[in-house]
Length: 314
Image (cartoon, rainbow, N blue to C red; front, side, top):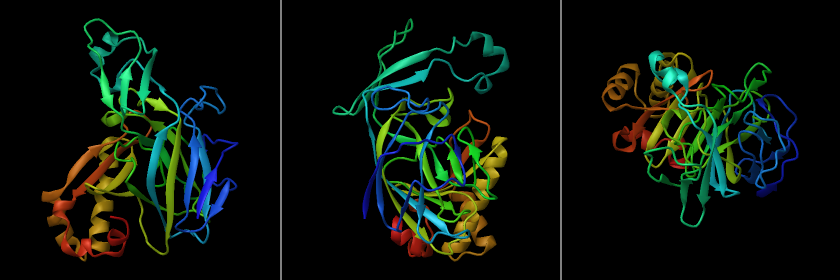
């Protein structure tokens, strides 16, 4: 079933809130998201600043120990205006360079849905040529309710997902999350028209959207950190600070995946991954950093290609 949901409330935390809508496994939801500061398609602020989330959406039958697979069908900007701030974050540069960073003002960007471009539309700094980028919408913050009845700020991330700001979370990707609350309770928001790796200014080009997702329940499918399947391969996502801990979470989860679905033992998984792994940086701005451990399709073990989850979603 395809649900069209119009939100009338937004959340600045992912937690065990009453479901806004309950759906069956396999259902599709089309809904609206506001931008990171709570502004809608008409540039009217209708939600509290700080990555307000749409949802939560419950999936019938989801229980702790299950997994929720979220296929991102479409992320469509709902306006032609986006914004960023000016400066790279101070902690992303050498301490001695911090005084040289510019004032952190808001900058306007123009989204052209026909040409599929994102153009810097603010006053152009001296020496800067015109900057036009391909439109590449993504979800910056999304996931399920955390474990232990927690409600955790949309500023951060964890095993449940959250504010990961990972560029691969675009249309066509499938994200898998561990279910910790009855129904799973899926939230989404904080979309970007385009973003560089790391979200090093604390924002991509922030937009409101009309987004469509498809939700699937995986009964008894155990995972501890988010997993991703896309046209390039598979990835596991670790969220923590410092960055080496996020890397540890992501790498451990990929080893678990290879043992779970590719039929490798611990030695085989280690040998396979050590030469085939790639790493992507997600968010390095917020309280928890994000690292993705990737295994490209060209390097999938044969048994992985025949596993149920890969055959179903890849």
